[in-house]
Length: 435
Image 1: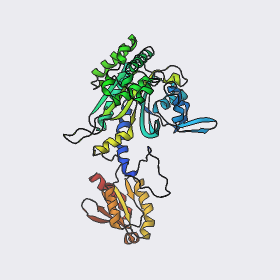
Image 2: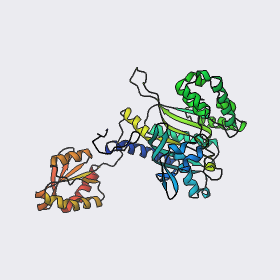
Image 3: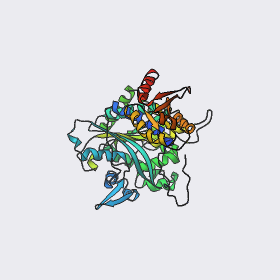
Image 4: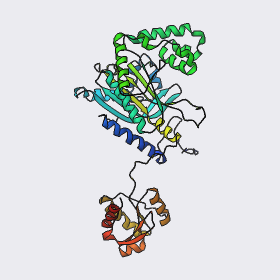
């Protein structure tokens, strides 16, 4: 549903959105599936503040994005520069460091969800993100577990077929060697590059390779591969990581154009890309949709001022997931509890007494809904149907005077008048007989 713009009515700028009631069932579906699996895998929830010190997002990328502060949504408070949350991973690591979680048994497994305001070349863009992070375990088994968990969540959400792209950036010894090889490649192929790629390649060869992969895939495939520039420890780490994936039957492809410039990134990086939607026999008009990005980030704690601490994690773009579900016309069940009973009333006397009747039914543990609108009984019964109510209680002027209420079976239309003092016992009996 698109909001209609009216004169002088404030509307959100491009790149931002609200989650309106019509769309809530998709979000409830996603959160319920994800939260259940995260609990199974022993991840604990953290609810994050909407803002951070801006340096939480600038320090981890100081060399690769020196101008990032200019792109953040920044304000000042108590003499400090604050920014809307721009990335889940630094925020989760900040929580770990700030609240003394170093003293907990490791690994510490955290997750959080909420809006993220991402800086882009065209301005800030909002996403709803699920961030998952395992802190304090340097083994490649953690990376494999995170991918395995990602697969289970993707399958639970019924997003259709997807591809997992993986690569390695290596360790602190490997990364500068690979960066030099990329710079040499771009110098050698300078005449084949677009002006944009050439400009970026001077300062950030990894970002340039990412751009080149979208502009000239064939030339990008000729670029140096990070696996050929790994130190021996990094080579061993990547090999063992692949062995874990093979053992866990995690499907993947190694994509040598998947790289990152993040200062905190080490070893593995990965993306989950859902395959594009197309009509039968047609070629998809758009590329696949990336819904999960992740990797190992062993330098993140150190760059935020903590002790060197191993960590790995991923972020899921929830609004992209919801868009995919809508694009597939997915039959998403509404996981919100449906009303068993709907209380409809008509007339002033009935309206006044219906508030206490509603409370009595609710306190008895019966899932009930009602409306105090001036709608007709017919309109209220339509609302009962919308809630998938089993029974409608019709409480009018006559019933209010007589101390009765009409119980109507929504599927058959059969009605019966019941004394008010017996209504709760009667509802419980009927719901137990036909739950």
